[in-house]
Amino acid sequence: MVKPVEFTFEETNIDEISTFAGRVAVFVTPEGSLDPAARRVNRLTKGAVARLAEDNLKAGDARVLAYPVGMAAEAVDVICLDRRASIEENRAAGVALAKTRGKAPLLVCVGNNNKAAQIVLGLALRDYRFDAHKTDAEQDDVRTVTVMSSKHEVIEANALPLLAVAEGAFFTRDLVNEPANVLTTTDFADRLVAMGDLGLQVEVLEEDKLAELGMGALLSVGQGSVSPSKVVVMKWMGAGDDRAPLALVGKGVVFDTGGISLKPAGGMEDMTMDMGGAGVVAGTMRALALRKAKANVIGLVGLVENMPSGNATRPGDVVTSMKGDTIEVINTDAEGRLVLCDVMHYAQETFKPSAMIDLATLTGAVIIGLGHDNAGVFSNDDHLCNGFLRAAENEGEGAWRLPLGKSYADQLKSRIADVKNVGGRPAGSITAAEFLHRFVQDGTPWIHLDIAGVAHVKSDTTYAPKGATGWGVLALSRLVQERFEVVEEE
Image 1: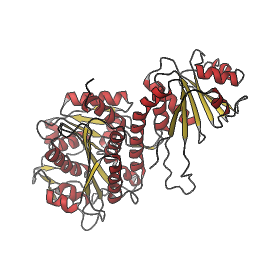
Image 2: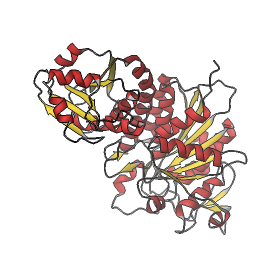
Image 3: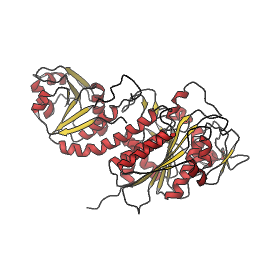
Image 4: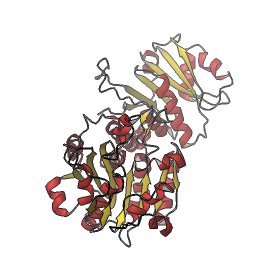
């Protein structure tokens, strides 16, 4: 796994700044003021930083002093940042550093910035690459960053939980970026089992167990593939066994051809990302374990591959879900909801969660409606939904609530079964959500997140290069912290 940058935190040391052989970063304000660390570097460079700061810099601007006189550094990165900068602006400063620094070691002199941990997070999130399959990649290079400040201990304490979340996002990105011949259902499950080393309790349910449980909907999706279908359950019980957990459920279709309802060839290579929901659940669970979250969270992912073969499910087949509902399969390319409905039912029957959130790259329709800036959000509970929307907004992860309703559910009526798996072209994302809504038990607060437009994108985002974004890990970790963690009494 590609890890975030390796950070160390040190007391400000002018001698180390002058002899540091990589890149040195300092901060100035839009008014041209220099913080204490920048003033020290300015003295070393005979006033070069101050002269640059007078060049009408705006917040977010980055300038480079190459091979500065008076220092051993190969460059000084000068970042313009207001003293009253928001969390988002501090993260943006970290992003700017990630874009300028290359592979050289970096020394970041942050002065007395109370939000410096957010600079660390922005830098960590943006400093990502996925080159595991490039033969000329430098696989073993360790990208190091030293954060230097008179408040280094405070910054470190604030940054470490954020870096845990960054590592969770990286784990998600790695999973979503992997090709399907590498990330098979078995390989995916093995990577999750390995997280037992972090304190997670991980259980893999194989096909015989899934059949015994009656997961006919999920099994119907994978029956055309030689890769075995699996459900992986990850438990993090950080609040003790007596509190009902939050359940996170992810769609993990490691490759989606569409099955017998075969997709067009153009763009099918992108269907390696159809396990994005499971990837976000896995990354969130990793983040919670790394930061020792005082919450009970169960992550469940259904892992399948949707392939056409002589054994594949056909359009017109009727399958039976674990709940007992019969489903007429109109389109085998509407397979994610068949995976999720069984895992959601299992989660509720087995763990009696206090709330449930499912994530899936579920519909192309959500991309038509919301593009690549927002995930579609559907919920039966305003309190839970509003909490998630605030968490997503605070973390800079776009999310937009869409409606549910009986008229949409009526589009799923089947002539020969209890329900059909598609409701036609109108409101395709909403009817998909209503299909899942059918499998939510009374009294269970629930959110469905359709992340088809945000899990994997064709151009750079603020915090990630093009490809997998890791969308959702930050927002879900924040939601857990704000709504589900135990508050210790003083």
